[in-house]
Image (cartoon, rainbow, N blue to C red; front, side, top):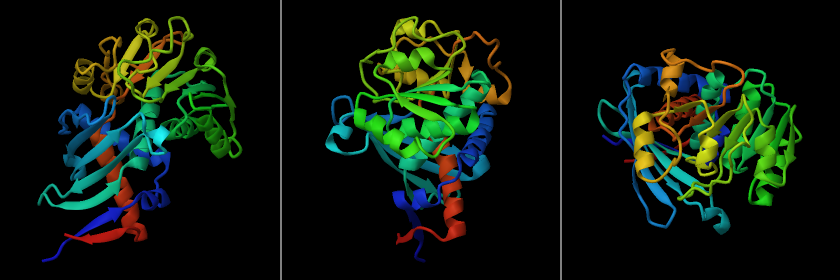
Length: 323
């Protein structure tokens, strides 16, 4: 009996993209399952075809969602100079009962949305609710998505944006600076964005060794910072000044450190899942410096992919491939 596989291109996914609030809700449900030990998710397995680049296989199974899947994702820091995306990938979803693939999705939007959603989730427990100034270092897809996500969750009035590529900042301001209630300002140095921020996001290329641009005493008291660049922007001395460190997965964090990434970060106090489950305390006072180093979870990709597929089914969007 012929069986079909749903294929959703990047354009398809963008056309039916769930809201950030929907993404955050499904991520919160996934992290609650993870806190209960009900998510199967091996560590990432990767190859390194080019110096400084990698392609990772990221499998996960979430029994409560009855979804299993794998993301095959590439991170190539030199790609922007080639006119290509820094991050790319596909997500394959399988029926956990039969093991057969049921859908293939472009992973670009899902990767950006689940990453920003996880950052916002952490900030809801670790940032000051009144935070109004956001610093963003790295204005590519991840940077722009993080601006949108944090502006939806906090009373952001001012965004200070920096990127080594001035055209990335210009694009960010052009795309987002006229239709929102906050002002995006280009700054001339990373330090300008760091020192004034209530919420700070580093979303530049992942480098090994880290370029460690952010130095000791740049970060003010009370800041919440999150790194989606494997802490490439951070010096060890700057990281040592944080009172709290949280990650999305302790095992994965250990593996990444052993591979030479996330250098200088102290052993995290707890996982994001524990914050959400209430077994780990959030921010304790207004002066605490809090840091979240999320490394990206396959379970998050699978959870958001299911949400996207649900939207596609309702709207009849996507192509059908014969097995």
